[in-house]
Image (cartoon, rainbow, N blue to C red; front, top):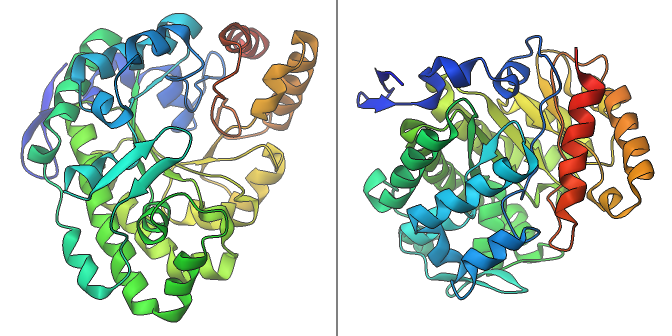
Length: 361
């Protein structure tokens, strides 16, 4: 792996500069180049559906596990070994950068991230300081260990998008209706704009750390943005998301953007600067391509619940996804959301094999 100079002027060794990962099926699909088969990876592939994951995580809190490089490396590698997926995704959580800059939060089992003191006023913004590589040394260490182990298999770095992080911070935790979030967005648009802009800087810095450590691609998760109408997204969210993508653009690694329930936002999400737009299961990929427009690869989009059906039904629904993707410039097969904890891991392994076989060229 060769060293090069990063946009920050530092010497860095990146997986993107390694010819072995550059020519991988996954990265070629991201760049909309010809591939020997459709690449596959799964959101939340490194997690609760795997018995080996449950074993190594036993007795270790989620946030603690994200800060243990050897554990992160093992968990990230588990689905690559088991399922033979075409890419690994870094094991972490979207609130890790917030914790790293001193926000008092915890991930409560069965609930999710809970913020001790929510961000509600302009004075609260001062608590969102800059993130530096020194805040997350465990990320740099873990990614270095991972890229050494993965070799030609790309590693995807990731972060939470400004809107979703803002929603957690304003609500104080997960929210069904995002009422406090929308109240700030509509009632104090300047405070909202300053909040998501601040989070864009933190998120961009967090992704830069991952890329400079060796990540070959990055994905921005906007888990809750499907709660917004297109006009609100364009005005109140798109500028911050675009700022994140712009921050990592000089590195030249593929940038993926994914949200849940975002069928009406797909074109705008592509406009924000993604090279690959993730699509959930609600919109067929051929229709998603029409909404996104040319020049973007698509990722998705089998309904995760299908994996609970018998194998013939899984194969039938998978074929429907592949047929809808047949005319795309670039396609990465994924679920329309994450792997569920109660999912049979063997079903995922069979799904990878089936997609590879059906798309072999």
